[in-house]
Image 1 (cartoon, rainbow, N blue to C red):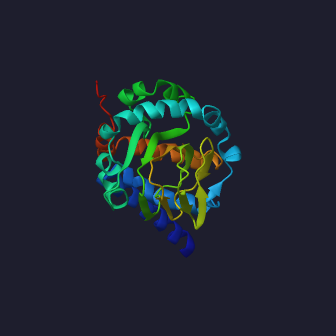
Image 2 (image 1 turned 90 degrees about the vertical axis):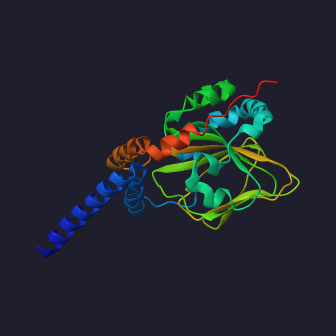
Image 3 (image 1 turned 135 degrees about the vertical axis):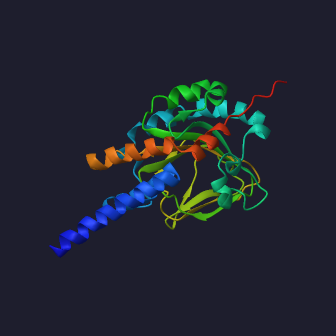
Length: 254
């Protein structure tokens, strides 16, 4: 009886915490829910993309087309926002030095950036074949940029990177969960960003990947439902709506 009461009060307290966080900021609901996922979902830092996200092959098959549009986008790079300019909560990892980390966003928290998508229509057409992708962007690291160690806070998505521009004069890599991965042009990698990770571009030149957050699908159905619900809460976040609004990149007319 005592054990049952403890369990009941624990559930009530957890539900109260979720409600409180929702009232403060809807996107914060993801924090306690992620703890539930961590209790049930065990995986290594890097995952088998063919098994967990088999459709990623479509990106690899079309990577040169995506890169061609990226090169056009980069002509307007001065108008592409730095990550922390779009979302100020990222300042602690994006603005540690003067070297920029820019993001050209196609989709953020299930919201399409129509003005950006018009600048890369073929890439957008490919991305729209992936309803499981919640966010997608070109992640642009200038030469000598280091993103310091940090943790992703939500285990309901996995992160996918497709190498598009990878300089070869010096290493460009991510260390996730203590394991190093060097990006390769035309090749994708799938990982769990809730492990401690950091990024280095030791080259003098720009490194760019297609960066996507992908819903976890290989999980019990109840957790899948909970996962979708959490994302609906995040869509209602005023903070994230402001961040999305800052992601639009104006086109410079020569």
